[in-house]
Length: 592
Image (tube, rainbow, N blue to C red; front, side, top):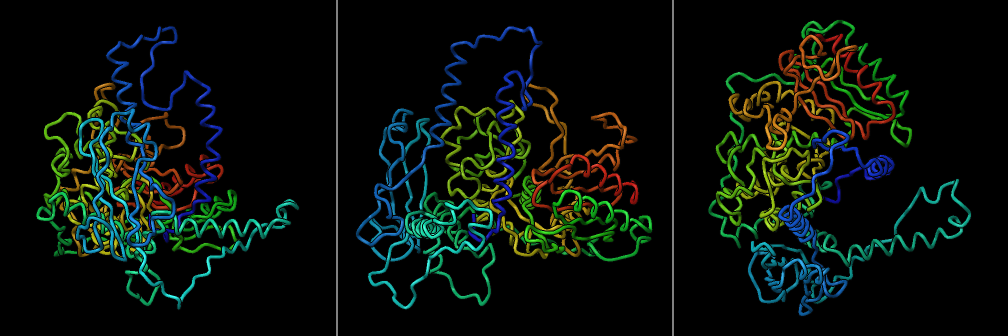
């Protein structure tokens, strides 16, 4: 992830800590389940698995354990090294790797910043280690790491002060012992920063990028970060070593429309088709919501492109009022953004939904039932689980890590909500278009739509947006793939993104799933739970969008030409009371 993404890790950590008691409770209630598995009657006797089933499960566990194995260096402090002192790469847990069936030694190939291969890293500058081997399932093993080789003579004109400043530490209520040892804590923090810089791959990436970077005359954007520069290098190396350079097909820019599509703009309530006091009513609910919970947020509601309201409510932790450019982590709404990016590849015939991943990833076996399709990647039926456990789209060889366990994968058998399929789809988009992930989002989506500096760290759950940016994406959805003079995809391509009934082998009908998008059914007060009847819904039956762990809102009612977005750092207390009240107010003032 780029170092300058500005992610609110404190908020997320607090959310995780808050969830721990829930996790413990779920663990204790052994007969409960949060997944979508079937349960037999209470008196049903558990079926004893066969020997074949036990062996298959053991094999799956072994593959997952191997996929989690990490590489390390034989000597600490050699991510940044002197030429002639070649870093030695090895498995962190060699005993486990050997036990799992990986017997052959790793082969390390060295490439400089020009991607020229050398037997050893013998010159100053950036170096990439391309690591090869054979996984226990017989598939090729590929990993790559970044290093920096020091020049013979270090510059003396600049010596950075790495002393860490903790302006709010220890605080007025700190115990006496903490206050009395304040200097010691600060020394430890400063030492930790120095170690992180000198003894980590991220440190080598940062130093190499800073040495190579040209002055911009302004703060670097996320897409200009040293981390994204590093992503570019690893993708370029992959395309070279695997012979994929000649297969790159660049995305074309959006087409120009003869008649511009609707854009978000100012206008009157009459133009929007809402009640004259719609803004006042929605703002009143939002203001009361922020005042009651102390959680600040920004709301945008528009109809027919006319902005009904776009206001910020509440104060940040420092007590300052937030503004309408408040940028927040939108969690799984990132999946919708990735689906929109993928639709451009779909529209230009570069990837098809029902193509196997093997059509893009050269090491994947062709016509193999263990390899999922791109549709399965987006509908949570790949057979793979998790979100960022394997490093996500920023892992240079995520697809290879998955390949190293592909022989036990079972696509289309179970519905399991997760993000790994989205991450794999982006890795495929990288190879097809020849651009690293963050650049794809920026060049082919964010910049054409006029977005600001959008941090995006994963394809499934790690984007940060403003309410305006989400509102533009929502209007893009309402317009069926266009915004203003630009047609990003054709209307017929847009229809292929819509949720469809999903069937998997162990459940029959499970859910309606689209390409990063769901039907959103907000019920009227008193309506039967789970009702899909139009008369029970606050908005139209084709209302779509995506939920968010952080409580952000992304909702589009295409029939009413209504878009509703909201960004916040977290759901906050009593969201279960305020969220329905908010949507009821919007529906009452806007109508279907």
